[in-house]
Image 1 (tube, rainbow, N blue to C red):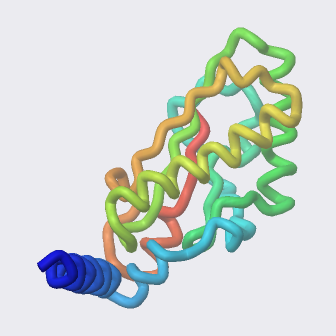
Image 2: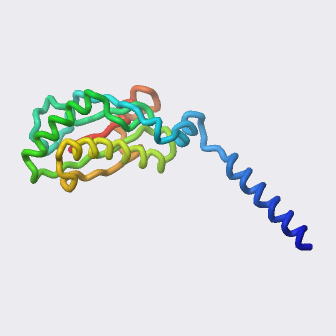
Image 3: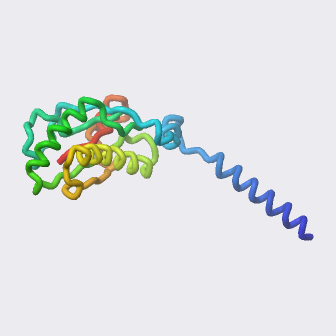
Length: 167
């Protein structure tokens, strides 16, 4: 009797493991987005646009919106150059608080996109802290896919929604 229970328990465990490993998440792109290892983070790009209502006193020509490639969270050289200018200004005006708002496009699960938006905003925050900005003046928030800059399910909309806004 004991061996039959053991066999039955092992079979139930095997079937449960098999079924949980075979669940689907939707489209192939969504599956790729949710299963991508964190080591595959790569370079993004920077917009020349400005965020209205910003309290930053840097030149308005310095980008305050930083765009990223699909499922990426590392800044490229252009973004780092703009952030160095912001960092210089923030060091000189230590009483100014800023908010970094991370965003993602609609592909992937809601939870994954929230985490991706946060990783993107944290990459900007980490760079500013490395530049000597006090981390206590920087607030990081992720909106994931919830606050798109552009509506639509196409490459041009998605590219505008993968961003960090500095406010």
